[in-house]
Image: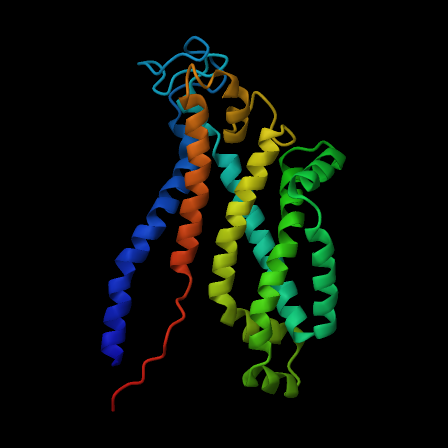
Length: 280
């Protein structure tokens, strides 16, 4: 395959990649800008409790008669910001620890043993332990718990992907040349793990959405009367037969957000394939 043909193949793949990334961009942008688009105040009753959709409330009212649409538009920002922060922190910490462990086997064995111990802790129990013991609790405690629970799984994945890279000839040559540890990690190993790290980021974002939403549902994160998708599900579950949108809308928003970001990360990851030999 010639260089021109390879370029054309890459250009033809761009529209497909853009289509897979676009839903995540739109949903994240809508969640971040949603509070400015809300037609009503999130704490002002505009209809009867569990009112059906109408002119004043497109998605009806919640258990206190507040506009479901306004609370839906407002309740996604903190979830998105928290989940993105957790996914970034987990990916960065796991990338560094996994790459260092691949270059320094003793450090790698210690990291893996600690990760194995932490993986035995159930997620819900870990959230409760951290958030209830954290002074004041709140969103910061939930983020800390999600990072602590996510790093062990991510480290094992990165370590497994970094081990073959660390065993390659150019890394061994760099080690023999006396290169420092951080040069080996930052210049030799991590650049070759871009696909793995992007896929890991997508997976950890989905896991973070699950953990942050679980904390909200358990009311150990955001507290009423805050507008939060998980809180909306908990608060309105008793009236799901009267106004299903009060529960269905935030549930669908959480699922679509996690799915779209995961697909976007997979679309942006470099695709490993066969190397074509140019015809001379």
